Length: 144
Length: 313
Image (cartoon, rainbow over all chains, first blue to last red; front, side):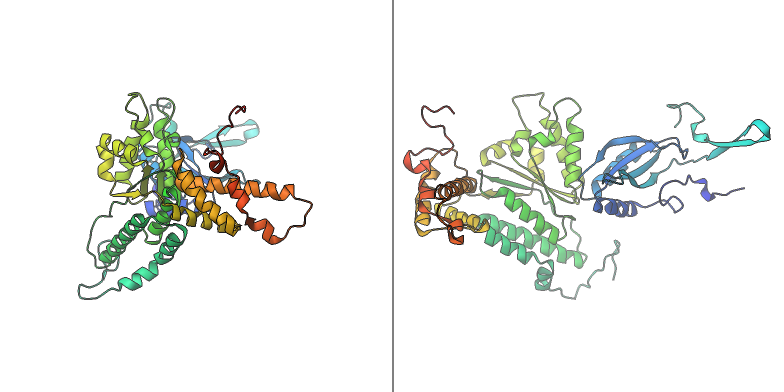
């Protein structure tokens, strides 16, 4: 049964929509910059939803006024790591928030195999469930 | 009618109104401000008007669908210290913003320290970060000739120059770079970096101010700080300026600003010394002759900052 057409990983903002174009990404980043959030580019090959901390590509970018610089970093990252998930995160440092306010995927591997469902027999015939991304079947460094 | 980029294109026989375009861009205000705030600098102002005219006409050409590449806007400002290079760069950013050649119109002012790193692999990220910050605006590199130090072949400045060159070429729509520095040193810098020379289109030379221009600058500065000169003080200032111009380390408007700051200090001291008397509003805003005459430039022909003979500096 196909519950997720296109078999796309859906996490963060806009992930149920078709992939954003560069102009749309710029417009979103513009919104983040307007609110004085620090935007950074992150990548990972493990799309598990509990995998919160992705690797940073370069330094977070503070005090930018224009999305062109961030788009340049995104494109550099796409060129360097075309087979990874790449996302853009906007961090709000103001008191009370101190958390990412935006996060959306801007690059996906060409082939997204999805997740395996693991069932675990527990005491008293109860059943535990977990998911494992097929993408992490091979050890780190040998995935592509 | 739409062209391939989805912009409307005016038919060949139609006319466009240059005057209307000029008014719509409202760069007139910037020119007015430029004339009001900046005394003298006639060649610079003429050049800025020429550049603005070129950009305005370029915009109209686009309306007709006459394609031309975005004109190169990178500039080089040369002149002695205190001749208003930074101020003009700020105005330039505003003009370019109003004409739509930069998106945000902010000015990021940096020097060698902000661009060049201290160890291997430090320079590239540092330069890139500055460039990213300046995108959508103007990157102003003060004392740009310091980037290139030929006497040290291991200097990281060259790396920074190469990254800058790459961005000046590839991100021409995102970034305008303005280099600034002394004339002779900048000439040497361009001679040893031909790549930089060919990418900078406009060279503006800032002349030194005459003593009358410096006097009007002083008046504008004082008016901005809500001070006024008494008649005696104005005469004293007129005498002060040529004397100061002859002394070493004269840096045009900046020296005048420092002189005025010290005059304000003396004024405050004078008022404080006579604090038994009641003061009027006029007393508080007036700089008297004695406040200007108190400068050591008059007495000993020395700078105020120099240590007194025999005194511990």
